[in-house]
Amino acid sequence: MKKILITLIQLAVTVALLIWVFHDPHQRAQMAIALRAADYRWVGAAIFAYIVVEIAAAVRWQILLRVQNIRLNFPRLSGLFLIGMFYNQFLPGGTGGDIIKSYLLLKETHDYKAGALLAVVFDRLIGLVALVAITVTLVSLRFDLLWRTPVTVESGFTPHQLLFVLGLLLGISISGLLVSFIISGFNLFHLLPHKFPGREKLIEIAAAYHLYARHWVATFFAFAVSLVAHLATFATFLFVAYALHAEDVRKTPPSPVPVINFFAVMPIERTITAVPISLAGIGLREKLLQVMLNNICGVTVEKAKLIGSLGFLVIMICCAPGGIVYFFYKPSGVTKRVRLREMEREVATAEHEIEEPQ
Image 1 (cartoon, rainbow, N blue to C red):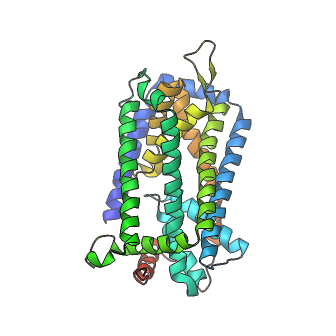
Image 2: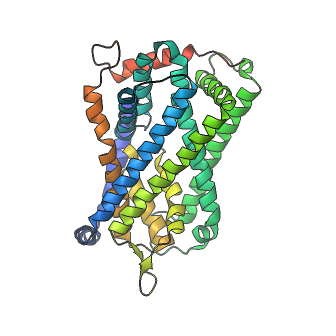
Image 3: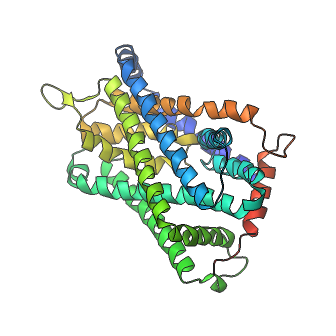
């Protein structure tokens, strides 16, 4: 019941945001003109860029699985990965794909259940660490521009406010990583009550830390391909901007937006839309890019919004094959479809079996 209520709230927020973003008939007319004039060859480049994201993420996951001595054949491995990508985009909350992928992986690796779960957990962690590293680097390089650019359009909030939100989210993420690292590094689990919220998850994370720290070369390569995946995601939206002929209209004549400026905006959008405020960040993404691209990069409001919508559509197109794969995928030893709630229960049971690292 709780999850249904949260989903309904997210749906209501999504609808409200879409109405807010697209209510202006003049802007909708300008968007239609921009779509008719778009160079769709760049949309093809955007699709290719996101395929690079998927390849990099798949390579990262394979690296993490091999550390656990888990070796699946290519059809199984790629099938599980595509299913996870699909459901992470289409299920509310953004982590449903991890549950489904964990469940299916458990069915394929009966002798390596703990390792399978740790690989999924560390896949998330290493992606988060890479995003934090890229965000801090790019925002630091363009902090003066991001902070000092005057607001030209009243959008409900300002770049300054978004930077504060970004700082808050980064602070929470970094603090969480540090706390989990300290607890695991000094083996402080005995100080936590057995009913402490998230205790099992902390044990799971700690076990992943200990294992992957011992295999630091593989962890380094996983981090490197994570950087590639994030940068290719930024490139996906950049190519969509090129397709729409998005330029800095404050200059005479209008000129293309510098890549480094565009890339400095993208971590803000990626980080804030990862918070489950709306379904898959729909509506929120368009609003964030309106504020940042219009004020920071001089892109017109209607094109800034379209970059968010069309970029997300590209991602949906690239993730859609996972839904088809799931329809035909049959895990080893499973004869019938299992509901998500049952998957969650079985994954939680396996998590309880993970022992504290010594």
